[in-house]
Length: 624
Image (cartoon, rainbow, N blue to C red; front, side):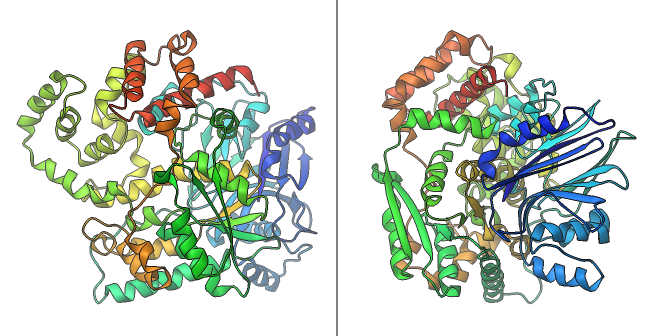
């Protein structure tokens, strides 16, 4: 696991080596074990390495035999030995035992088609001296980040946004991206907070020729469309067996490492299933890590302990009472952009805890997205039924919603059912609703009211038809939300602690198996992940299967009434924040007072605003 950075310009920069090192020094946390650089003509490639496989000879950058192709690479390629054997049979010669060198020779053999041969997580930069181009690529789910900017001077890229800021390029705030943040509480791909910078989409590659100033992009994988109906002759029993086999293989190949390895164990179905599969294929006890909070509603340690005891894991747990003010300040710099998911806090804490003992941890992320585990999936059928309301009535319903006072029961519901598109109703119900944003934000910071605007902007996360809303919601959560929220959180918080995290449930072959399973086998009554539970339940303690689903959260509502109260009010009611022209002072105060009185839990929205203001301040105080 590494961090990568670099640039390509039409003419060589005299300060290239200095700038490249400055870019890489800022991501030392991603790779504290080693560093490496290659500067040639207008190309500069750099990396920071966290050594996981081939500890002795895996130094980067790595080249082919004659030095015409160079690579820096962040990630892990599973089953690379099989690829290596095939390449050796084709005449390629290897100097190392690393997965990185395999990619170089695959590129020689297949060009940009090489990326479809890779199974793993990766962000890749290749310098092809023969054609004087840089090729970037990102794994199928976007587990590893990769930012880039094409300017008049050439191409600049990096694992984190701070790399591009350190390159010296001028950057302009992207108001459109920040408006999307105020809806989703994250900036969706491919946007970034800056107009000039974009995130390379998952499952895609980009090629830049500096001489011609020519940019090309291509896609080597897309998330398959979730099936509505079973294939002829298929049964739940057969489907559960396919899932179990694909899942176990995905876990097994992610247990290969030359350093200590463990697993996060939250006590939920997904992480517990990962630990069970690891234990069944390992001769040694699995190392497991769990954290809890003093508040009982946020403490899953008893559930995690059930799994640890069943599989006799080398279990470590910790009840945390973090210095929340200091911790929040530490998180801001690692995200580089506004990020409003407060579960970043426990993710950071469990990563910090695990990193004291291991360098690699497996996690259960991805099960909800692939198998319909979220409540938003279970609500989709009901949302679709509101499409039967005649168009002639929708305008009247919306006017009633607008007329009611903000706190009136049913106001948001009426606005939601008045929307024309099923997907627009889905977004309204599950993200920052219109009336909250309309009361809170100034007119300049509101998204356009027309549904068509948002549907067009998020088109890359939608299926080409507007049919089954459950299908759309499964696809959206597995492309937009997983990519922009879950995987960003896990990557930044684990790498902040120099810990590699692997997600077997996000193996692309398992994802293709999951996509072929019909909705009715995933969601049964008021519970999701039915088919996945059927595939793994015999391995789990019976009591675990009956526990209600909990999110991986923190007692934020209580913190905002306690330790974080002064900080929250001081920042959100400050003249500096209000002068930004984003939020209306009266409504910000109303949200704070309402939360203090416990009349309503506004912690999610307040956290999103807090993260936005802290990001602005970090940007102003730390130019790089």
